[in-house]
Image (cartoon, rainbow, N blue to C red):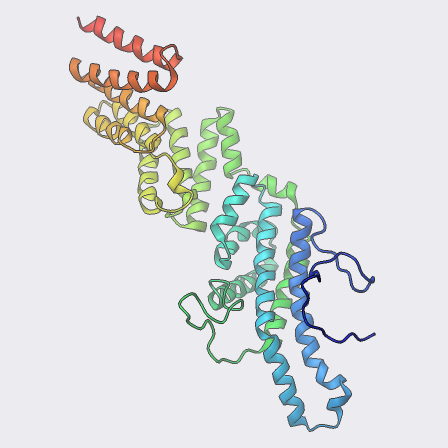
Length: 399
C-alpha cells in the first residue's frame, strides 16, 4: 500500500533490521573475501541496472505512450543525465575493488603487506592495476593476450578519466574547481566495455586463478627469498631477491618504499655472504632511494642509522677507515635513531680508531658507547659488559 511521504521526526530511526521480506537486505555478510566479492558485483550490476532501467522506463510507462518521439527522447535524455554520475561512480568502484580483491586473495602476501598495499594505492587505479597485473598474468593464455591488453587499456583509460576517484563523488574539488565540464558520455558504450571487463575476468582469469599454482610460480618472490635467507641458503636467496628487485622496479619505480627496503635486505644477504662490493652497492642504492622518499609514509618511521652503520662496517672491513668513520658518525647523529644503533655507531668509530692506533679517540668513543649502553640497559647488561671488556683489553694492549 502506498505510503505518503512525511516530514522527518527525531524519534524515527534510519537504520532498522526488521520489516517485510521484500524490504530487508543483507549487508556485510561473510568474511573479508566474501564481502569483497559482494561489494564488487553489487557495484557492477547496480550500474548496469540503472542504465537499463532508465533506458526502458519511458517506453513502459503508459503516460508516455501517446507522446511524440521528441518528447520521449527528451525524457530519456533527462533520465540518462540523472544516472550518469552514479553509474560512473559504481563502475569505477567495481573496477577498483575487483583489482584489489585479486591481489588480496591471490598474492600470498601476509596481512602487513596487504595493509601496505591498501595504503600505497589509495584509490589510484593505475597503482592498483600494477599490483593485480602480475597475478592475472600467471594464468594468461597466449590466445587471451589481446583481451588482456584491452583490459589494461580500459583500466588506464578509467584512471586517466578519474585519477583522484573524486570526479563522480563531488562536483567540485577542495579549491572549488569543477571536476567535470559539460561533456557528452555514451553510457551504453561504457556499459558494453565494462561488461567486457567482467566477462573476460570471470571467464578467462578468475575461474583459473589457483593458490597452489601461484605458490609454484612465486618461488622468486620476496617471501621465498626470506625463506631461503632463513635457511641460510644465501645464493638462492640472492637469486630470488634480484628477481624481486627487477619486478619491484618495473611495478613501482625506484622511488618507492618497497624498492628501498628490498635493496636494504639484499644488501644484508650479500654482506652475510661476504660479498662486500655488492652489499655496499645495494646499501648505497637504498640510501639514494631513501633521500627521495624520506618524508613519506612508512619511510618516515624507518631508522636509517642501521644502513649507515652497515656501510661503516663494510668500509672498516675493507680498511677504508676514514670512510668508515664518516658513515658511523652520520649514524650516531641521527636524532631519532634506536639506542642500539647509536651504541653500534660509537663502537664502530672506536674500533676503527683502534686500527689506526689512535688511543685517545678509541677511548673517547668506547666511553660514549659505554655511557649510552649503561644508561639504557644497565652496567650488567651483556652489551655493556662486552664494550667495557673491549675497552679494557684495548688499554691493556696499548700500555
